[in-house]
Image (cartoon, rainbow, N blue to C red; front, side):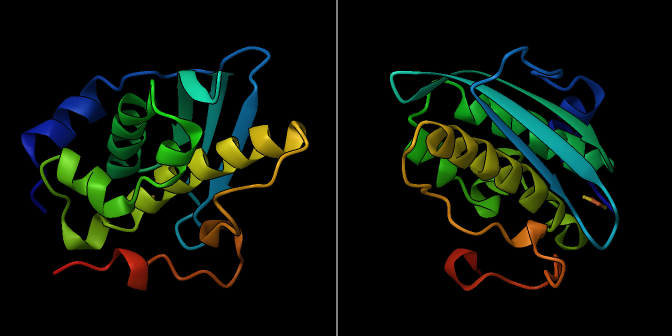
Length: 150
Ligand code: FES
């Protein structure tokens, strides 16, 4: 399995690792197939992600995608951050081996859950909707129509 240089860079030296104390939003997700888990914490200011940190107990691809997702989301509006797709993450990393594409879902889902957690805590409507990796019947190897690209 060949990983891009950027994946190896983020795996070896992941950015934004940790937990934000008194975070405004928390997202915890797990991949029911491999058992990998991740937690994202965010600080929000004026509907923008001011700070973001992650903790991932998982494979190298899950760690690299978590790292790049936190880089991408920092400074974004909540809506833009919640709309980041696994394909955008893979692209930003210079590609992921097909067998590892499902790992990027963990990071994007963790971010979506954190955004919705913030919104719901503030009496607002969630924008990311139901999270597939929180669903026990979720198949992380399955394709998602809205994100499917060839
Ligand atoms: Fe579980 Fe990569 S093998 S997220």
